[in-house]
Image (cartoon, rainbow, N blue to C red):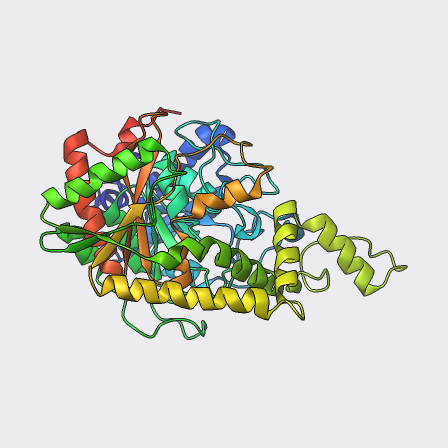
Amino acid sequence: MIFKTAAELGGLIAAGETTAVEVAQAHLERIEQVEGKVNAFLHVAAEGALEQARAVDARRAAGEELGPLAGVPIAHKDVFTTRDMPTTCASKILEGWVPPYDATVTTRLREAGLVILGKTNMDEFAMGSSTENSAYGPTSNPWDLSRIPGGSSGGSSAAVAAYEAPLATGTDTGGSIRQPAAVTGLVGMKPTYGGSSRFGLVAFASSLDTPGPFARNVLDAALLHEAFSGHDPRDSTSISQPVPPVVEAARQADVAGLRVGVVKEFGGDGYQPGVLARFNETVELLESLGAKVVEVSCPSFDYALSSYYLIAPSEASSNLARFDAMRYGLRVGDDGTRSAEEVMALTRAAGFGPEVKRRIILGTYALSSGYYDAYYGKAQQVRTLIARDFEAAFGQVDVLVSPTTPTTAFPIGERADDPMAMYLADLCTIPSNMAGNAAISVPCGLADEDGLPVGLQIMAPVLADDRCYRVGAAVEKALEDRWGGPLLGKAPAL
């Protein structure tokens, strides 16, 4: 049961060949079996999941028309509010907090009949590329338990790769869906900014945060994308446009006649040879499938990382000011002798981890009087140049491609004391967040050096999310024909 795709599970439940309860129980048993090794979940809602599954079975028995994912289990990133289970953002400052409302993404998962198994581990407040910044311990990569599963959505990627759930949600601020998907052999999609609602998503960087799906294949990702996306009047940045035809595109799986641009700036020094080898082979594969491949230069991409690490911390500094020990979450030192300012300082010192503090300090500095124009203002100007580079590139080609990450999954602890080395994991993914366009990562093989997964990133214009799925599905089909099955079939069994 646990090895079936989400589409297969939905079909079996709809046909009456199994029940949502049986599917949920199988995945809960898998969680119990492997979770001690993986640490993908911060909260497992076993009783709640079975209750949701029983409700789906009852609705179907009553003859109600349900969606294609009704009864399919899902792991939910612990950055989305959930009224019936804790939302901690993997931080001590929110330990045990149960929100009074659901995020829009959560609501739409429930309406689609998906069964939420629990909340997944992550880098604290989504700040990181390895899930080592969690206050509740790191998550391990199911391919090699000594390595990171990516971040910040590493709990979600590990849960799907370990067959604890067929689907998961994540958020992508600078690559936090695509990078974990790449290093765990999954499909991970960052929709167009504003295409999926941020209401109820605990904010890190409001102009960058984007909810998106994890899955083991392109069609499953498209089905989940369609289920929770669309306009939300409660989110002022939500786009009032229909969801692109992503499921239809995933089923099309054809690149004949498409113009594919290889980003010149994403390659060379700093890239693992095995990553470049698989990427180059996949570009050749696209040509053999009928795509026209050309090299495209986007010179401003070289400055994306630097500008991102001014904009994102600045927005984090502003967003995290709400954690003041007065309204919710942790409160330290409130013994009646200290002022509100002292309690706030003690609480934030005890509740936030080192990476969160680092980014708050950096962001506060960048926004301070006398430095705002020199740092934050300049970074926003670079952001405009990046968007213009994308616009020019998409005038020449239909999609852009690159490696998703410069390297495969690195060992846990290897970059913990080197923030710059950690930040470089998002080198290829950050430009799409800065411009707001759509981007997906799909598996394209294993690196020769370590036998670990490599991801292909496909980038498309704003609201052309369907192109990502169309190209991704074509690559997936051709590679699975070559491999004799999905890439995850080559993963070591837990």
